[in-house]
Length: 256
Image: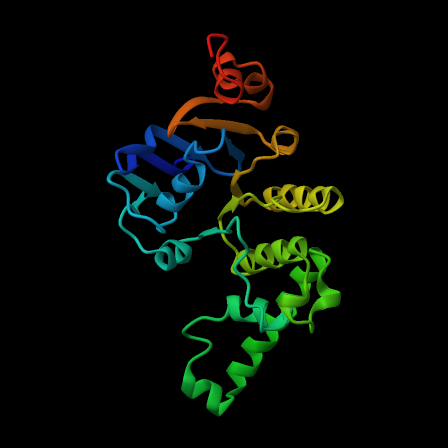
């Protein structure tokens, strides 16, 4: 089996004549914690949208574990093991934290209408497994004390943790994290970074978009830099720090 989980070729997306994404070739390796950085408008979130099926590309190919997912819907990509979080959290405010977790773990097979009416033994067993796993994950994320609270009662940072919990309950092989530290206080940011490291340690391949450069440099094995939709650098954090093209992309060239 190839060590690559994601292969991107000639991926392009334009809005009104402006190229938001123009990636010729990019391969991402299994069991690697990779971050994508770049100045505002670099195309980072659009790139995420394209590889996770939330937007259609103008052209190009995306392969997940050698399977062409270029035209796949987000739910189909998720079922293949690649789950993403969002910059703006998408939790169900009117459901409890536990209900949010259990809903994310439910499937067509274990949550059919007839089974829910009949309450078959198999249904009860499945429900208990999901409940137990939900509590296990909530405890890892330090939100188990809020299990019976409505999600709307959580802080922004706690909602980030809940969304992370909902993402990992179905055992993804690949996790796309879109600005997991946005709007989070420094103490909680440190906790989230440790959680991300723990997930990587469990064998989940992680691709993260993040504006907090220091956090990126602290935990990433590999850093990819986008500017005007193109990959301008791809290396270790140490090399990225001193890369002149990266410095100019963030600060502007001497001429400017």
